[in-house]
Image: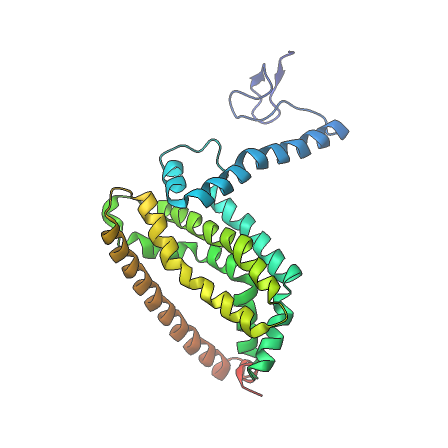
Length: 265
């Protein structure tokens, strides 16, 4: 193979990649280049994405522990995995289940006349998977408190919670959404099933952290999870109170139109 200078760092390249910066040898973009790029996408997905999905479904806690310990070559990056799964979840809920339309019908049936409350219900129901991804920093802060003595830092807890969210999203796509599809003509039952699915989270958390911290007795894991749930509830109440106060103040002093938006008709 002919030696050439790297187009990025100018070092001499003797193989397909630069030994100094890692850039691929220069290749003019043509039809073969595009075909190779597409092939690489599917190879990367098959090697990483589906492998991580399968491992996460089998045992999310053990999979997260292996990743944290350095066994990462075959895995899809956990935070990226949560975003991809959230995107799939949103696509199914919006395009297949038509959650937006269903929530409008539900609001009418329940006589929810506030445009604000109707929109809030719709966003939470349709985009909860992305909301959970965006809340990963908060979840990490909460879960680190009871498990602080185990020595994992805040950023490692973000990765842990990525696996928890990924598992919950996967179960929603594979189990809950097909059930919701069967009841798509009944908004009340759909809402009941959707809300009931959150009751599985405590059990998922116990299973996850027992798989991750397999040296901790189950009883202690359960106590710590109860602490996590209590902290989550307190955080939720605090956010609701602060958001409500901020919303009212904004409506009173900045834009009174937002109060009309929240006012029942």
